Image (cartoon, rainbow, N blue to C red):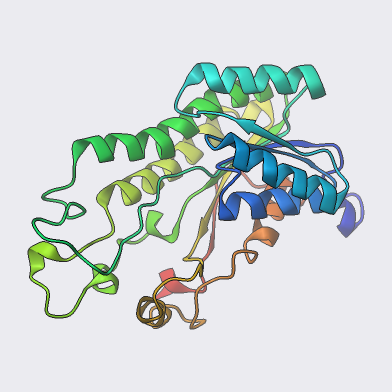
Length: 279
C-alpha cells in the first residue's frame, strides 16, 4: 500500500456531489469531505437550504463548497448540475446518493384507515418515494457516473439503511390499545427503495469496474434526532450497542468509502448499525 495512512484519506481538490445535501446526514457527509480537503456540492430540491449549508461549510473548513438547487427526479436538472460543475472544475470525482423520502411514523393516529399500512398505501406516495430514492439515484449515476466512466476514474457511494437488509420491526411504532387498522407502520416503499439500491450498487460495480469507477454502499442504522423517547428506548433494545447513532457517527465510514483508503473495494455494503442486523 503506497503513501502514508493520512494520504489514503486525503480528498484535496476532489469534487463530491451529495444529493439531499441540505438534510441532516447530507450536511454531515459534506462536512467530512470538506474536512479532508474536498469540494462538497450540496445538491438538493431545497436550493436555499443547500446554499445556506454550503456557505457555513465553506466558512468553517476554508474550502470551496457549493449549494445547488437540483431535482434529481428530472434528468435535465441533473445534466445542468453536471454541466455547471464541468465548467467550473472540469470533473466530478465523487457521487454520494443520499437523497430519499423518509416519512416519519408518528405515534398519534387520526381517524379512519391508516394510510401507511400496506393495504392502504397510496400508489402516488409509492411512486414518489421510488422516484426520489431510486430513480433519482439511477439518474445521477447515469448522468454523473457516465462522465466518470468516460474519464476513467470516480467513486459512487449509495446511502442505504439497515432496512435494506432486514424488515422493519413494526412493533416499534405501535400505540397501545389502538385497533390494528389504525396502527401506523414503516411504509413498504422505504424498504423497497433501499433494497433495490443495494442491487444497483452491485450492478454498477461490475458494469464500470474496467472503467475504474468504484461503487459501494453504506447501510446506516437509525439516527437520533429528537424522536419520542418511548420509541428511542424500544429501538435501543434491538441494538447491541444499546443506543441510536449520533448524526456524525457515519462520517468515518463515508470518508473511508469515498477515499483511496478503500481503493480495492467495490460492490460492497458497509453496515454501520450498532450491531442491529447481527441479532
